Length: 211
Image 1: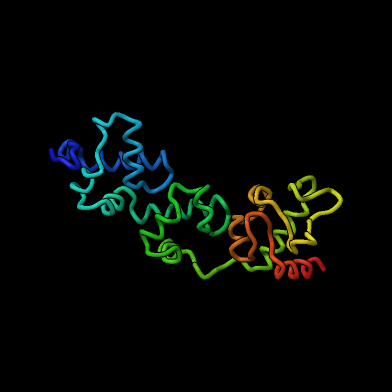
Image 2: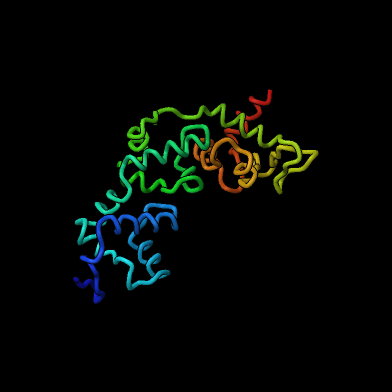
């Protein structure tokens, strides 16, 4: 046994398989690649006397990153991307992972160096982007759905264009429920904020699309 910060670590009491299985149990709870903080929080909810301390992983695997790579190999992260893609019937975006994946986008950036590199490793084409016309068309589709209104919409006047703010207002909740893509994809590509989509430049594009 060893000591770390005054705590006893049973480095010889766990097989590598048991340590990996424990990390995977933490992942099942927090739905992301566990941090040391996640491990400690998970252990606190269980019996800390029989839960491996973070230093146990560092002693056994050399460092925390190597322990994570052993528990969650690159191939598994790539398979998870394809599982999400099959679920959504399209290439996944970083925003999709929070809702649909066991691993968050930060895990892919840390493991592969960037989101684009992760897509390349998983054999997606990172250069393929949804055309802006597709995004605009989908915004109109969502805005014009029958019997679905945001707080700023009404049956007689939708979608709403604000004369004072000069933007088109469409609730995030409505996009999350009915949009083809993540609502953050619309915001990142077309502008706007959580309070409304889309800015004045895109408003012109929307009117052109309507014509």
